[in-house]
Image (cartoon, rainbow, N blue to C red; front, side):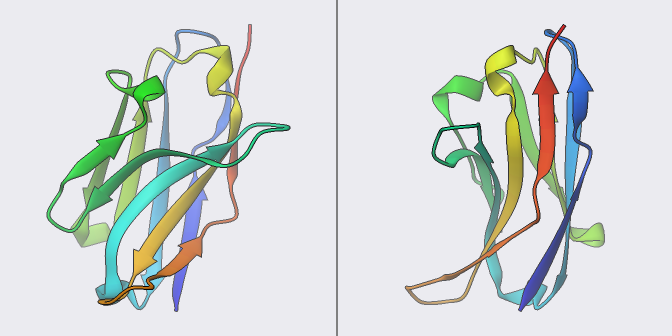
Length: 119
C-alpha cells in the first residue's frame, strides 16, 4: 500500500504561481511513476504531468511551458511548480502513484488539494 499526502493548494491571481507537494509513504519501493491529475467542476479528471523513476516526464499540452514536475527522492516527495496560472487551471489537483512491476499496475490517490485561480 502507498499513502499520499498533498499540500500547497490555494487561491492565486491569474499570472501567479503555486507549488504543490505530494509526500509518499508506505510501499514506496513499488512506485514506478508519480504524477498529478486535476478535475474541474463538471469535467472528468485529466492528466497534468507525470514523472518516472528514471526522471522521464510527460505533460498535458495545456500546461507545457508553465508547469514543472520534479521529485526529491530523499524526501519521497513529488512537486508540481505551476507558473503563469490561468483561471482555467482552477481544479482539485490529485497526486497519483502508480505501483507494481507488471500490468495491471496499482494506482493510489491523494485526497486532493484545491487550486483556484481568480482575481
